[in-house]
Length: 193
Image 1 (tube, helix red, strand yellow):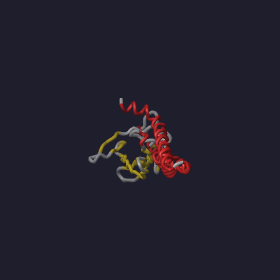
Image 2 (spheres, rainbow, N blue to C red; image 1 turned 45 degrees about the vertical axis):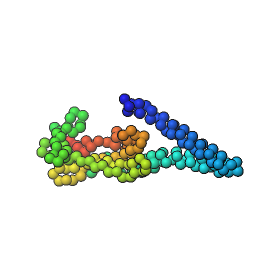
Image 3 (spheres, helix red, strand yellow; image 1 turned 90 degrees about the vertical axis):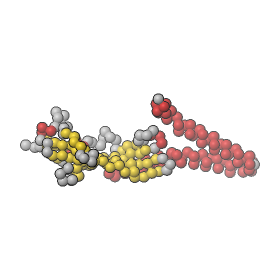
Image 4 (tube, rainbow, N blue to C red; image 1 turned 120 degrees about the vertical axis):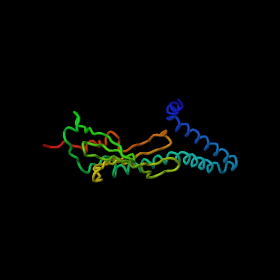
């Protein structure tokens, strides 16, 4: 219930924050004008404007810097990378052309997709690349598919994610889009006869 209320109020948080920042800057401007007198009222107003701009850019600036970094890294190497296609017998494909193997688990929690006697290991790495204080971070998530017998890397899918205060425990940006980057199942092709 609390999460639902927080989710509904989330769009109003920046507006409320701007209002609070404006009120604090205005209060500081008035206090300085009273203290310094009329001859330095322009200087007090300038200090109030600078204070307001600082209060606005510090919490929001990290999100902007984080997204710029996220999309730059995503443009460089994000998405699905197929290094080698694997040919499997037609019996291992469903009517839609998707591979259908059996998932097995190793002793140390490894995940394998097996097609008969041939198995492929699925591994993930999760790396925090950059942290933009106070609370924005960019994460690189790599999903790797390897031949279990040889250890050869066959395909990898690289995603960049940004976590911020506004994401409520999720991610505020993911690049590339999950739907646009392709699927690991493209790695497998039916054997040509």
